[in-house]
Image (cartoon, rainbow, N blue to C red; front, side, top):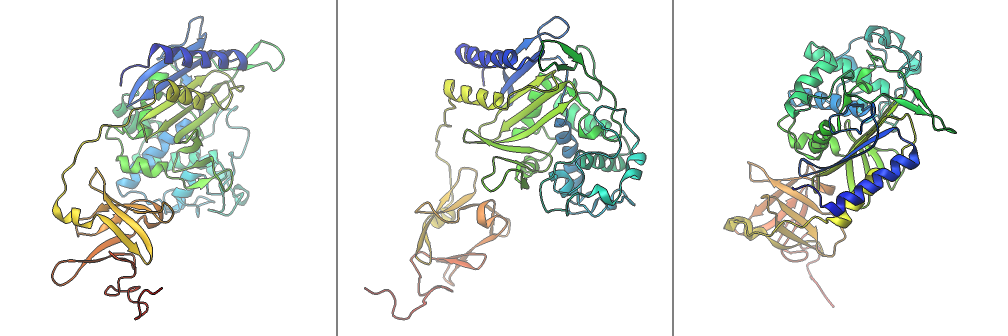
Length: 451
């Protein structure tokens, strides 16, 4: 994908300029990612007297959590950790040991949002042994699994889980297993030059107050890392599915699945496994927000068309919520993505035989072959249970999504080899409505259809 058009770049830059000026941000760096590459970079304000560049470091706060979660998912894929494991299996003797790894990753553990003791973001950190020693019954704010309750403490514990399995601290594990393979060499636990200084902007005057920066030690996995726009662009590509061999793309897709929502029935915001989720402008985005004293950052990625957006700012507060979604809207308006060209694909006669109409009782469904070799079974009327299925080595098909995710579709043939029906977890689909020759629910009335 080539860089954005000049007219698109101007529209993007104007939106960034308005944000920096109206929100009074000392410096603001923004990037757009398409097809795994940095397609546009823009900045406003100054860092040490110069405009921020693609290699200027900013603190990324809780975006750190997604990188820690990626190491946890690597441990899961290696068989060292099960997401249903209680954390006490990996950190024996911990007072809140009943909460599971999955609950910690998805902020459904019910643990306190913050660690015990002074505010961890603004005071020197404590060793993990001291942190664990301060935990007690009051650390649990909700029944595990009951609800979404964001917990920085939970990711402090996940960082310790990583350390105990890798025999190195969490930051070393993230650097060796995630950052270096992805080429994110400018993402570090502590700042390196050139980097922005974190500031608070006075609410009623145009003056600045430098904010503190320190090693959070045990709580560092919740928000310690510094990064650059170029590195965070690579991270956006990773979240969108360009995993560079660090994780199986299917595992990243699992991390993007909603495990919980934080704003009610119609959800616009939620959380997967170490990734925040949001709906905006018809898109479903995955990524993470981040804030630490003096810094704000956010990265969002849409895997459906491999686009990502991010910003990094050196201000404690003040950014509007709509900057990145506005940038996506500008991109859609100025350079709408063209659909991929249709090309014919081969299919053997056995698969072609399965295509076409099937009936679940009186309800009409259509089975289609998909380009990736999967099949879809969708209601013809557009309402009802729709799913995609992937072929398995034993001749069955595994549900990938929707109501039938994880369920087995079997093709049932008669003694002469001809198609009889589809068996989808006991639901029978036949070539005609209520085929009397088929198994349940076929032949429900010997009189058949009548006027």
